Amino acid sequence: MRLIRFEQMGRTAYGILDGEKISVLWGLPYEGGLANTTGEVMSLPEVTLLAPCEPSKIIALGLNYRDHAAEFGNPVPDEPLIFMKPSTAVIGPDEVIVYPAMSRRVDYEAELAVVLGKTARHVPEEKAFDYVLGYTCFNDVTARDLQKKDGQFTRAKGFDTFAAMGPWIETDIGDPDRLEVEAVLNGARKQHSNTSNMVFGVATLISFISRIMTLLPGDVIATGTPSGIGPMQVGDVVEIKVEKIGTLRNQVVAERVKA
Ligand code: MG
Image (cartoon, rainbow, N blue to C red; front, side):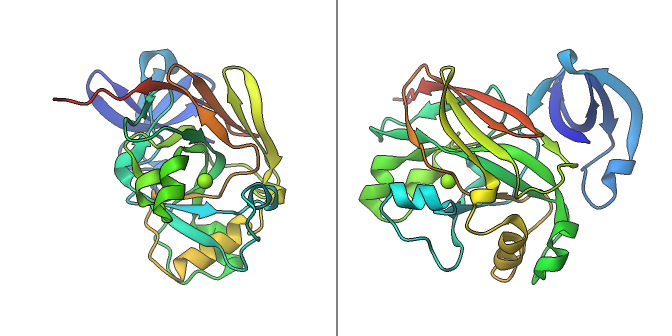
């Protein structure tokens, strides 16, 4: 099942997407909300897709692919290495990524993202998938120069528009640890790997993070990026493709700072 969040004539709602047909939901898609449709049916061309959820927080993974750790010259971590991106960084499909005036190097990072469907705290690995609503494509946009300069990630990963996600949440994906992940920049493939190359798989990540902090419905785990990261320029179009989900597309624009 594909879940979308959309805007239409000034209202925002969640819906179930089947082909181009949208079954509108009463409320949120969590905790049984998927069963509560309004009866209203719309079609995809009538709406504007938004980021498919509104996370209270995004937990992202550093160095979770062996090849990416190697390209950074870093050892593979012995525990998941996590950082956070603010909720204010979220954008959806076809929204623009703003290249900050403060940075000289802004990179794409293609990632599989997990969307939580239930409140999760101290979840054992074998129950982790009970807490998943579904999966979406994620671009963990990063100001690489500032990441290196600061030594911690809040500024480099936290700019507005630096958490692109969508175009929808796919609930039926089979094994999330066996999916092709790609980044395509202006039509040229730049990253290509499979989530089977992750150091820590999805169930391990959910269990690990839930032993640190409470994960809420709609929260997002960005599972890390493979090798092949690289810079984007103003005007570029970046696509993140994840097998069985689809393509997230965004364009990069220059920041216009208000005087
Ligand atoms: Mg990343």
